[in-house]
Image 1 (cartoon, helix red, strand yellow):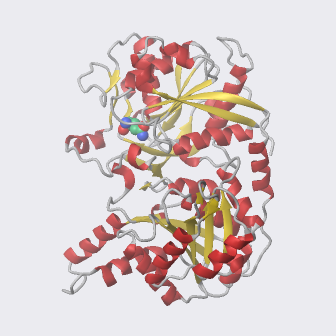
Image 2 (image 1 turned 60 degrees about the vertical axis):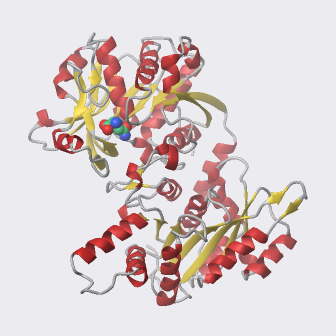
Image 3 (image 1 turned 120 degrees about the vertical axis):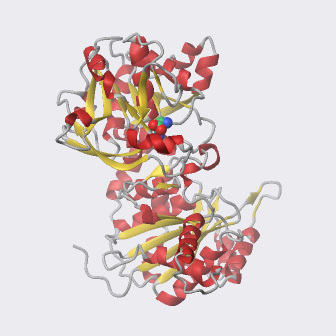
Length: 569
Ligand code: GLN
């Protein structure tokens, strides 16, 4: 057990300057990981200045993936970084948007809870923000890290900055510190590193009364001593707290090591009046050593609709990578726009040389038939397949059409009038869909799943656990009227959700698996939200193992023996 801490929960606020997309989420998560490796109990949250109540209704093209927590919050993808780096779940409290803050303030105003006072940004909005930071603190939490989204100087971000300033004042500056992440550009034509934009962003912070304690410098290359001295002087930060965060050579998982080498964890503890403890890096270092020296590669096709957006499938590509690390492999992920498989007569060519096919979650008709083509190819050619959410619904439709001969089988999301509604809304969702309400209308968050067949790959992957928990985000479900026909034709139901254990007939299909196939497993859930580099998700591990087996020449059909290569480390 960790010794009792003196004083209140400590707080670190992380801001960003000059430009966005600097990896503030990764930097925050890395600091949190170092503190955790020192045995401190940490929590981490993101304050997002946009007005959406949550990112659930945002287009993945604009904002990247929507991440889902156990308690059903639809969040910014930074929470995914937090969970992967920390190896611990976040909750609803880890995500706060301006939209949510205003919604709550307006609600209170409507309920008359401000006693007729004029409702203003200061103090009402800032109080609400401070309350959501305070909500993470407590006797069992040593440090709360709060990342403020956006860039210093954004109009939307001001109430958050002001709330953070007040927070330091109220809790005491010996317990609250600020980390500022700034971009330090290298001007090629002049051959020089420029510190002026970073100086300006720190000045902007000072205008609102925040003096950063740490300056994390994002640059292409490490900074010279001169440059660091200049930054320290003009940004008013101790020289030892000017930290280099140059681009890492291999993987973002190297960032905690980069910060550790510069002893940022020591400086943070000293600044926050916490004892400096040993920081256990062994497990993390071992994982990174696997990333650096893979023994072979494996090629996985990711067939989806938001392929062109770098971050739209962030957790999926991360989970593939995590599983690859465990097998000492490097995953070569080939992103295939599913629509392109519909339009191109030579579509099969795109799948040649692929060791495994994955169809991730998604919404809407575009590219649907292309996904079905890719799945058919996987099923018929003994290519390992992993389906996630929509990827499970698509695998079911493909099977119904091409194995059971139900030519118009479909999801009612794609064709409302199909005579074989294989995938259809849950009763409870029907009214909501009719009303055309989109925000917060899904089966969301963690649900238990009973693993039904001990001999299945699903069961083997999950280490023969009888009950597992996975996260959900969808409106449609497998239609139980088709279950018997599926089983008779070789598709087994290896995972079921039993809302009422006394009524097994009311169960929902969670995981399907094809018999007599190297690996064909599809789940209604989103296992990608529960994978980390140190502990990859078991279904992804099984899938990658099978894909590598296929690469090494598994027979083109009938091989039913699944072996998981040993996991080292
Ligand atoms: N569109 C499907 C549904 O709502 C699948 C959702 C998903 O893949 N996340 O059920």
